[in-house]
Length: 487
Image 1 (tube, helix red, strand yellow):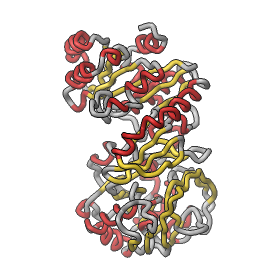
Image 2 (tube, rainbow, N blue to C red):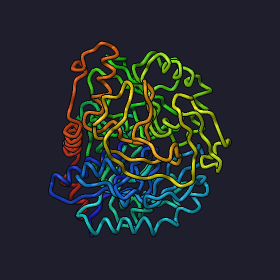
Image 3 (spheres, rainbow, N blue to C red):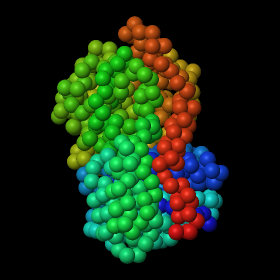
Image 4 (cartoon, one colour):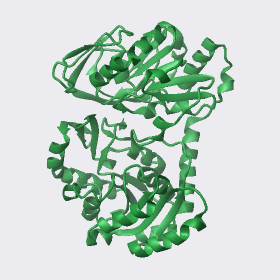
């Protein structure tokens, strides 16, 4: 069976996911077969594997860093928020249904056999498993039924590295308070504490770290600098949403829907020096973009209502009428049609039918059975502004409850309004280039002014940069001693 090591955090968004990805890359570089694992993930960003299973995007990133194919065993329980108090529950890649938080909390120990089976299966095939926790291990109201932090560490006898985020402030209280609230047997599992996202002179920090180690009774395993790497974020806590972006030669506005999902679909556009990608959630920030993207969402009808109420629907319709390129992906595609029906209350949004934005000539019905499949092909029959996509290969995945047509091409639309169910549709060779070239023609710009790149080479370089930062920041001798149970 594989050796294991677990990354837990003092709170959400302290960098557990990227630290786990960095360790996966380091162990791969050092010659080990390594796989990531997170027993329960709550996230809006998901992925469909080759066998049609759904899993959290964070473990997909970690698998890529490890140089292996994503596998639903790496994330056996996925919770996808659909309302403020409920989520769609996915176990071993398949939908179990929607549950309110109270119901899931009551039932989640039922999933322990599935979680352990997934972990043990992975552990029989790899040398090392890098396990990621969720949130904080000392949420004392949730600890009794924990299956993702110390509860899981006990089940698989995993040593723990505890990470805190110094960029938020209060690092000493974060780490010491977390250790202090752990039970004795849990504290014994913590083999090192890590300060993440550090900026400044390490010498100024060292005296505090020495006292912190004494207070916690645990050595400092490392101080990792604030690292700017372009790697997909886990969920809606992403800094992308809050970043103020100046409008550049080509300006793309992504509508930040309340329950936005799979926003990593649009990463290819971020990597051109003179293309701005802005996430906006009010009409005052829309301005006059060259392209408007409606992304996927965890609740299509509720978020369409929100678009209507805040005035963005009307603004998008006016922009489309004026010739702006409008592109909807998954739920965003559904919103562009004439109407959306939900006769069985799949989304529990309180209505059985709602009119759409009327920009595409199609209707959508939401059904109980979820479409989960990878897909690939060649664009055909594309008309209008994006006709240059014809003949280009696409590859991605579909993940949706709605059916818009019995048979449909990969890309629906003409003129300047398009939609697709395919996540990852912009990733294929030449696809983002073709779209940006069409926008350049419309504005009389030279495409070469935007800058180009090799996306796969770029992604591998980012994982290597992350691994270098993590390796340099950690005491890797200590990490390996923890892994080998020598401390």
